[in-house]
Image (cartoon, rainbow, N blue to C red; front, top):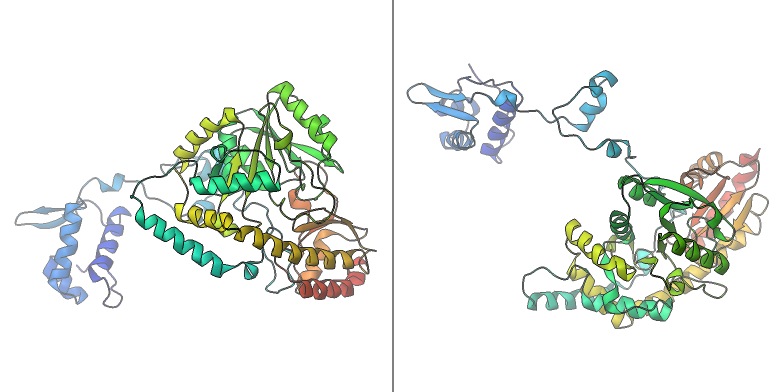
Length: 490
């Protein structure tokens, strides 16, 4: 009897036949003891050479899927029907609740990961238009890629001269030196190069810190509203996450749970609302943590862009008791795809963090690290920041011109002193959903604040990201928005 095998074209004939026969055996369509056609008959049936079918049978025989009996032929091996069949995510999703509750042979993740949302509620571009205020994006068109190319070429030459071996878990020494100098000059964070650990972005740093400080059931506190991936990161450790409200001075320290083991804050530019934490509140937080032996994560995610007022001292520069793990990233100064961040931890956490880093991925891409070190040490990073500061200042000014001008009856902006996004409250009767939907029809991308709240009742508002929208597009988008607002407000 002919066996059903489809051959498509003349490419990888043996591979096509092998995969279909193997699938038939594993799925039970070819049960144990089934006799297969001879290699000559199968070749004739499929219109291929006998050499091709011989290769397939020899491979399946060597892997144990087939057995040969002298003088009798080739048969499907016995016992393979006991192998569990892996089901696709779509098949699992289609199962009834009763079937899903039954024990499965397929590998299963811990229930915690089954409950984790597939996509964290962060803004993603929603319109194919230049009039998109998505947050967290930078303008790559303004990055000096010619200079970066030279840095990468230099890094390639350095890498070609070195031995093929694993590198320092904490990162390349030149980059750690460049980061420590940058932090000392720009952020008043005193550190030596060997105090810095390079990570694969800020999220990686947060994950490492949470892993070494939190035990299942312990309390981790974070700002509400706040950054959703941080909540997911802490929850993944088995910790109990407690959102803490913020006000005009930042995190309300008096609302912190007394037994919190870890506290996450964005004191320089609260995410997503934008206000800085007052000096009085910073000192209060440090005193609170010292009394309880708690660890503070300070996420200084876009501190480079300050447009008014004196810069506030980071918590790290006020820390005398070894409480603050200072986390930074190049995602907002260069672009997120670079995947380079860093942490300057308390001395007591440095060794455990290195162990956690070695267990997770050993170290990051040394080519990127060497190129970035050259980019910083040669002064090109500072030049780039100065250019981008002027660009973002102009975009911020245009945004404020509209929000405080013809849009003032509908918006109450929370004017930040720094950063590349601006939050604003909506005046009644506007709602986030109605406004975002109407704006989308006008090819303007707007994003609500509601996804950033965990426990506190969301106040209707929007987050305008201006990192990747040009000044003239801000002007055009908000002029267009002013035209549709009267209709939306009715």
